[in-house]
Image 1 (cartoon, rainbow, N blue to C red):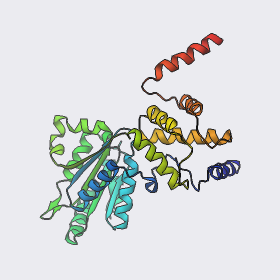
Image 2: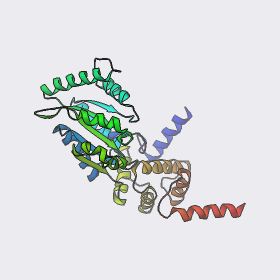
Image 3: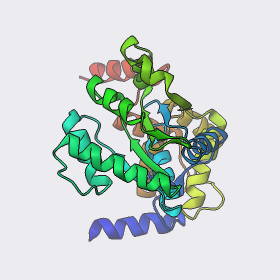
Image 4: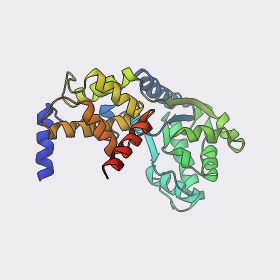
Length: 296
């Protein structure tokens, strides 16, 4: 109860109606920068045009899962059936069992042949009705070779109008490197579209923070000064997940100090608490260690 009361006071203090920097992948908070608009447009186009394989990559924390959540919302609104594999550390049998559950296939879900037979029947039925079917695999960089090969073979299911199953592989840059390996060349050749999310620029970082605050009820961002915003970009390197962590902790610190403005001292404290590492940070860390040692 105390936590709920404090959360209400925290939001009221800053004039917010929701928490602006939650780490959960909420599509309503999607920051639509030029690269994000391009990525979601490419994903949507790839699915609608039945291109087959689409790859989405990006460094840890750049917003791939949020992008997929946004796509899932669009698919649901368009009544496009899809399966979502969120745990990629699977054996081949576990992979087929998971997609059987997600597609609600009426078969023995522990039997790969029966799953394949039921999936093929579903895809043919939907294709004959001019309906699209999608398989989304998150954290695809963790897929073992044999599972990736099964995914490739699923991509062979097609009719005269195109691929019957649209497959989206989302993962860290390791996925791109994996697809460059010789044993994956057949899969690489089947990839019709590639999207890559890069870290935000300094300007995009400022816009991102203002966008999330506006979505949470603060129409005009007046907590973070330009200097503080520049420092946040430096210390997070434009990674949205880190930006969320830093800004959330800074707001909590400001609230505890009854201040409606973030300061450099708050950024410094939060950086230490989160163990942030950024270009030029090592000397500061060693200075802190030196001062601590001197006091001892």
